[in-house]
Image (tube, rainbow, N blue to C red; front, top):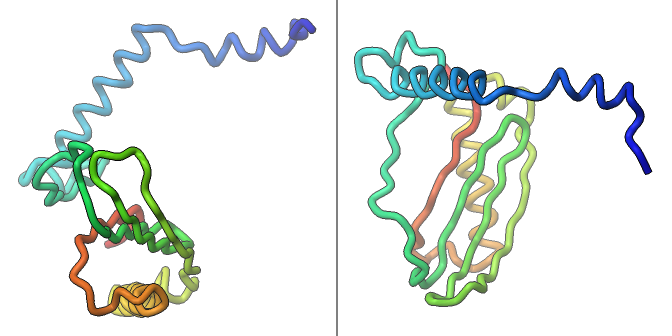
Amino acid sequence: MSVPEKVVQVCEELIISDETLRRVMDALDHEINLGLGKETNSSATVKCFPTYVRCLPNGQEKGKFLALDLGGTNFRVLLIDLEGGSTTAKMVSKIYAVPTAVMVGPGDGLFDHIAQCLSTFMHEHKVENVKIPLGFTFSFPCR
């Protein structure tokens, strides 16, 4: 089955040259560096905030881990059980809606909502009294 000529013509406009791709890459790298800079963060187009990652995974991790992901309309909580030295992992997760009023309201309401969802999840999975490492992805615009 051949691709119609019109589709080929439209798609040709979407092909990016190596030179253009390099310019985009350099511009993004520049903006990220401005976002990471202490003096330039406030005026940067791409805001970057510090991370507290202490080391990279090596495949030997073992035990239970919590992962939180806050997006625009949903908050996801994951409980991951790693066996160490294995490619298998057990994972349970739950998605909680973030009500519009919470999403656009003050930060106190948002973090109260996150805390309540996390508490509920941990109680449901019987880990509320267990000390568990936690990672938090906050992909939510805020001021």
